[in-house]
Image (cartoon, rainbow, N blue to C red; front, top):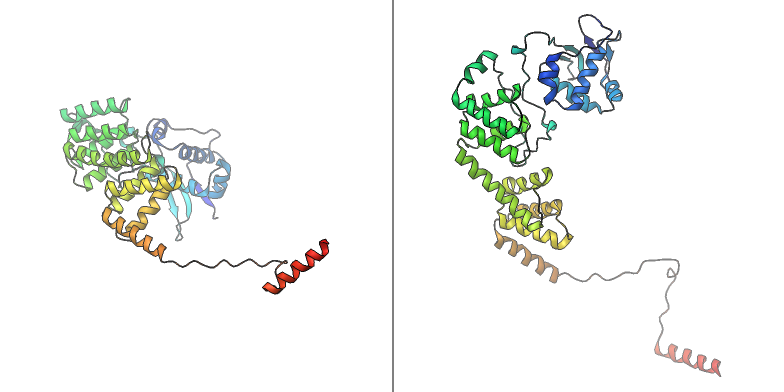
Length: 355
């Protein structure tokens, strides 16, 4: 692993954490990412300004991939400048000075999908595109709009906390760039919070999916979410679950609906067969059934009945395989064949012996 040089202006015996980092960046960052950033700050206070990814990973008890992911995250947030060689390896890191005006320093909301495990279970898992950041002057101008004011007030109620700078940036992005109405913005937050998802990265991913699918009104959004809720309810009923599907389970359901394009009755049939064969709600087993049906071009219940019939016929026509006894030290010798005469002679000897 190549050594990485750190560049800073002077060396200090103390580690100073800028208030801007604490106020604007730390609240929305993954704890592991914060540890890496603080470790970098600490490293600048030493005389040895060289280290490797593996050395940081060992120090923080993380994997090298975790460290690289954290560095990439802070680079996106514009807190670091990273230099790389032709092999895409990190060769140098420069810290960005955060002591300037906070009005021009705003964290981006293209948060790493792993912060929330971005369980866009009914949406695509695309990482939100890098978008513009609104200046304080632009924020003041846009938030003077009564519609935006009301939407922000309702969003605060849904989130159960005051809006953070990243929340404001996202709301303005939805209004200005995605052209969401205030009603659609409010329903977006209502829907996400109802799924216990308050992370801006998740909310933005849902919004981008809606925009991609042409959902531009509250009515269309409600119709779309009702459809997906019906899919979840069908699976829950078939599996006998009295809870909301988990992240991986929702991803399975999404695959069955969006990739396989199966109707609820086909999905329910696979769930029923899963219960009969495994005795439990096994999403992985159901996925195997549905994947097989997908590969066999199943479109409806009649196609499933046809496959069942073909399977039954094939099973009925199969020949019985003769049983071959395994060889061992007791039957490795040639076996003798006895005739009726042999048995009669053996019986005579046994009778005479008894006399």
